[in-house]
Amino acid sequence: MRIGIGYDVHRLTEGRDLVLGGVRIPHKMGLDGHSDADVLVHAIMDALLGAIGAGDIGKLFPDTDPQYKGIDSMLLLAEVIRRVEAAGYCIGNIDAVVIAQKPKLGPHFPAMKERLAQVMHCEENRINLKATTEEHLGFTGREEGIAAEAVCLLEEFA
Ligand code: MG
Image 1 (spheres, protein in one colour):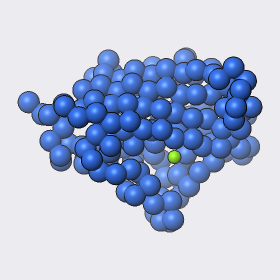
Image 2 (image 1 turned 180 degrees about the vertical axis):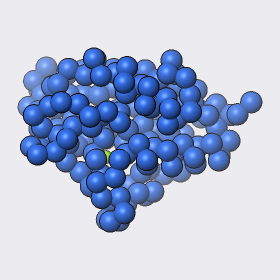
Image 3 (image 1 turned 90 degrees about the vertical axis):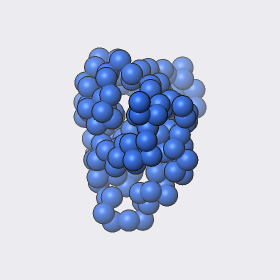
């Protein structure tokens, strides 16, 4: 078995779509970034890359590379999964938390899990998503940004 951890933050800004876990969420602001800035998927990718000892997404998909501008992070996740599988591993489980003052994310988790499970070639019950606020404290509390943390456990293919 291999384990990995991932953490990411993106700034909230007006005029961008909010995309989390591959799902577009109605909100007055979206996350800023070179890609679609899906902070949850970025944290999950870093956990996966960490588990196979492959560095991080900054190394794999540099934000100076124009081919990744505005890209759907689910496409990047598919590439990370290809590498995980090439290394001989499959998803044991993923646990992730999104840290955001707003909006309420719980109602969107089923759709996110469905998309993530498809791309990660695993059952939905291997993916757990959580959300928390930070009680109006700090940058997430002031709605300046959204953070996400993820851990994963990978198992060798039987
Ligand atoms: Mg990121």
